[in-house]
Length: 315
Ligand code: PMV
Image 1 (cartoon, rainbow, N blue to C red):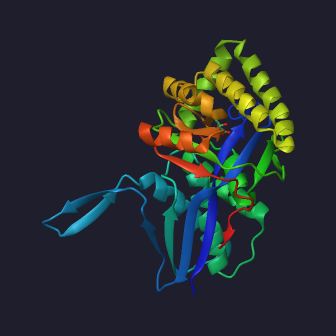
Image 2 (image 1 turned 90 degrees about the vertical axis):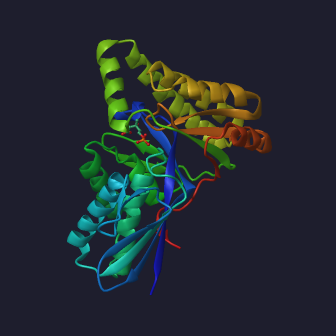
């Protein structure tokens, strides 16, 4: 019998980078993410639908090889190995579909990791708690990437809007909803690891930059109040402030500044989400139709998303 899991993507509403230095952050699961089906089969197989790969054809051998998705499959492979170690062998076919392109910065790698773990446990008939899935999902990201905060895998696992606290790491559900908003995907210049390293180098070199981290921490605390009050004007203004502060850390480039400047009359505010240098840009719309028309004209991929109130689970 077929079992299906939906694992939501994640955006960071506030506090990325500063969270690496012990400040709180606010993350939200969104209703675009990764779908994983699992059916029993005679052997373990993984099929993807619509995950972009290049194909190489060897006419003499009548053989086709896929390339360009090695990183994506590294998450799949590691999640399957950890699942097999935890829940035993499973002969099943997994089919993965994604609403969002991999490596765009919307936590699809965390969604794939957590989604595979959940689907495997479900098909193996095992009971698994959220805490364990979040931990195993984080382990997958750590093995594949070397460094990874537990923020994305926790948000995929628990869903909704979450306050992320560090030292020790924990999450606090904020139990709030937001009107639909937009995410725009800009080509990313650099990996999360590289960008985090550059910020660390700047902080090591220029003492003043540590005050930027402090300021981001203050923005997060104030933003929690705005979110709880459902005050979109305040939310947008604080997103703008957070974005300029991230700019001071060198992770917001001209494309983002231009985009936000152009859309300013039609949005409450916006910011990058994640490590930056492109990737996801969040926009809180005042006039959604206008925003949508402008984005269409610009040609960047964009999505209208809502907060997904649940974590990865059966659908
Ligand atoms: O770019 P992403 O989605 O991998 O997010 C990175 C978030 C940082 O705060 C910059 C790093 C981290 O580990 O929290």
